[in-house]
Image (cartoon, rainbow over all chains, first blue to last red; front, side, top):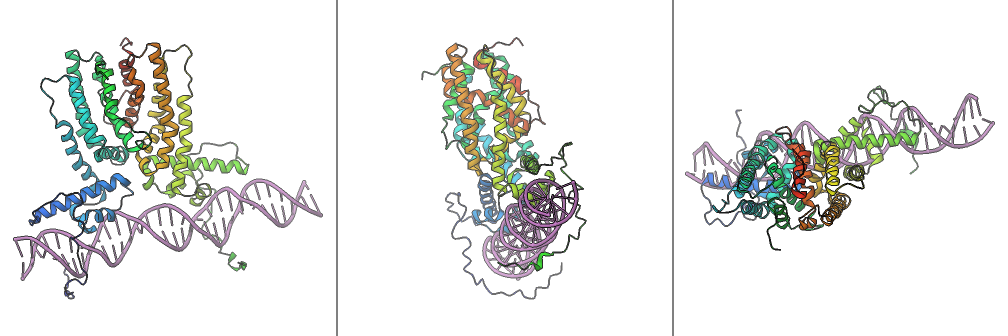
Length: 236
Length: 236
DNA sequence: ACAATATGACTGACTAGTCAGTCATTGTCA
DNA sequence: TGACAATGACTGACTAGTCAGTCATATTGT
């Protein structure tokens, strides 16, 4: 489109244009380098947008989230969002994908002690899950996926493939190890690894919906659940 | 205030105004009685609106649901909705309240056999839940509550009071009975009745999100779970 | 200098909620 | 009983407002 640039002149901004003084990326820790590199700055902004969008989507859900709010929270103009994402919908999908990877890493990131019992491994996993997911924003993310999944089949697919399917497979392997070692009596448990993680899901949902009515000691609940599977053991 | 009735005219509707011929309630089954009573008709329409709204809210969530669609689905004009409900939000809240009552009745409606074991009672409850809730629209309703709960504290409160709190209390009583009868070994289970129902929640969510990826035999899963609690029993 | 980035005012599509007007049903009276 | 009046449930075009996405203009890094 040949664009006559007639009224190019406009003189330097009449407004203070303090654009970038006040807020910065709200969560970004101190970055001594002003990140003078362009690509770096762009990546920072992209990160700030994702952070902000996550908070808004968690708080309001997909449909009720306003991109104006996301932009304001990220300390960015609305147009900037569209430099990084095609539209609201693909932003949401990419967001979930981006956020799930570190969640998985958190969970599988703590390798079990070589000599640990299966129970200890599962309990360690539960502890990590409850501390790193159920009681943090990551837990709300899980709830968000449950909430929006039916309307975003790709998100549900992705979550199934990357989290559910792998998680259950891993859990099944652990259960079979427990059976082989004689720690677990109930052989059918390997057919439904979901049972092992069910209290974790309860914890996530309880946290979001009911914790203000009645707090739930998720870790203790999980220990009681493990007692059912492995037999009682704890002294208390 | 004196209103000259000049502008009473407003011209008769330019459209055919076939108001009541064409569409009717699309989903309403044959009603042999024309329900000539006025109040009856009104109640019928209110019911149709609630039905339609439920479907729409389940399919799209609160924010993305259009009242125009609800009206069309109910075979009613949009204005009619506002004769029955103050606004979209209170319609949603009232809807949930209306729908939860029969759900509770379904669940607690099957009284246990007097001579049944605790395990049989719980298994009967699970069967009812899976058949009447998890695999029906009621299950989607539960997911809807999980999804919208944080944005509708009153809905979450109501659900906690009427379903969660009562359900857990009843389950706790059952567990204590099981402990007293010697059917349940693990005494700590009474502290976390959530564990007993956790697979039920898994079933609801699995049904909505993942059943197209991998079907889940919820009842069998629940039986395996009960085997953990009551000890193995089934022959298969 | 000038291309790459960023901005935010603007547009147009969309929708919750309103209300003047219609008409089937019910009530009243001769 | 039949004519006429009163009622209020119902309608749907309309208003006021919202918000995703655009683009002319401004800023910035090299």
